[in-house]
Image (cartoon, rainbow, N blue to C red):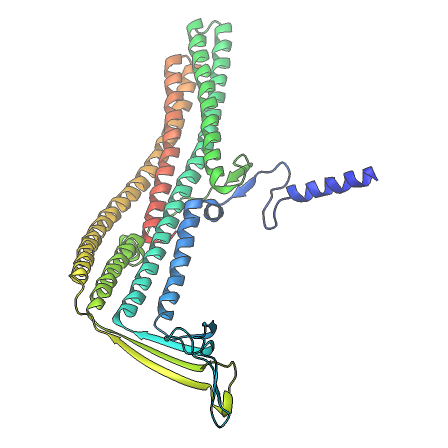
Length: 446
């Protein structure tokens, strides 16, 4: 019996620690390859600020339906029993036998026992309800724009981390190549020293260079691990999950005209500022609505009698209807309404100033981002050429050193120049990829 219980307990533990359905696991020993699109999707599912912006956008979208519902008639079915103490006179009986119950002690009430069962339809017609609908629409539009801003901000963060990790991994490869190159040069100087072709100083110089390259390799691996953890925090429940990024060719730059057209149509900051102006306009309209009267309509159908029945004593019909129309005309409120109107107009003017500022910032950001991406593209091609030139320079310098025409210092300088050129090449690639991603984020294409 104890063995059966132990087995059941083990199965329960395994069920609790099993991965949820829909998760993708890499084969054993192979890291999970994450594309940039997959990284963005995972980050959107895990980042709390983005989740809050998304929830706010959905909640404010429902406010529009709530505001529109306030413009439509409301119907309720009202049921009530009211008991009032009698005045103590007792019931009276007429000559024809009709019995009249004793009146209640409170003159405002209708009878000692009163039953109300009515369907009530109410409707209020006023400018304030229209203003509330406009305000709800503008608020929902602004929340949707803020959600898009949060989405693009998260995308920019993921893109930065993703390309930084890719560059860190490439720099590890550069550091490994440099360390192997330094070790090979140390071996070459040892052989030439043993052959009495060079002095021991060349061996020392080569060893110092090799030791530095070993430290550079350790730093590069540490930087790659840190970049992996930073991105893993956004992607996985456990940031230590093993995964790899995908290397893709550099994309082309979009045309300036296409960038400007997309930025003007799909920029969320501009949409948010426009929605803020519409919200302030609706608030002004709602404040001015207090100057006008509201028309309240009410229709009731049912019973309101001393008996809970369709017919009362002597066949009296208890069923019936009543209707009312109420108009409240504002006369004097000690200038509260003019002051509310002035408040909303002040806020509206500020919102309009913010809109014009957003438009100016958009123009400047568009020019800056496009210029940054274009320059990064040009320099990326130049850095690739510089790395190729440095590699050729190292090859020729080593040949000259082998032939006794160059010094060890020249070889070390050529090795250092190649390492710096390759690292600069990777930084240039990341700069272009990040600049292009920022441009795509600004135009709404990512």
